[in-house]
Length: 75
Image (cartoon, rainbow, N blue to C red; front, side, top):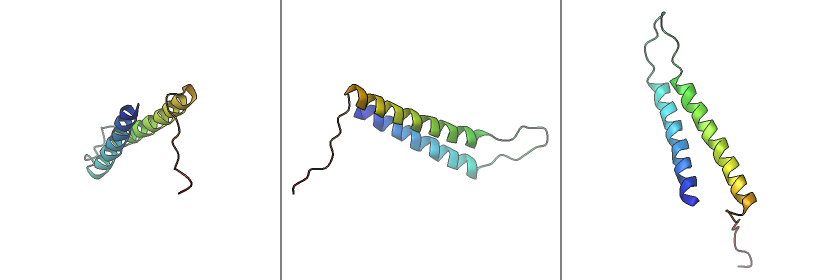
C-alpha cells in the first residue's frame, strides 16, 4: 500500500516537472499550427493523479487497509 502511494506521489512530481519544462521550452508559434497544450495536459494529469490518490487513500481508510498512526502522546 505504501509503495503504491509513493509511486503515485513520484508520478505527481514528474508531471509537475514536465509541465515546468514545457513552460520553459515553448515551441515557436506558427499561424497554421494549433497552440501548444503540453503544459496544460501535464498539469491536468497532475491534478487527476492527486485527486485519484486522495480518493484511494480515503477508500483504503474506509475499508481498513490503512490505519491512522498519529503521534505518540504522553512524552
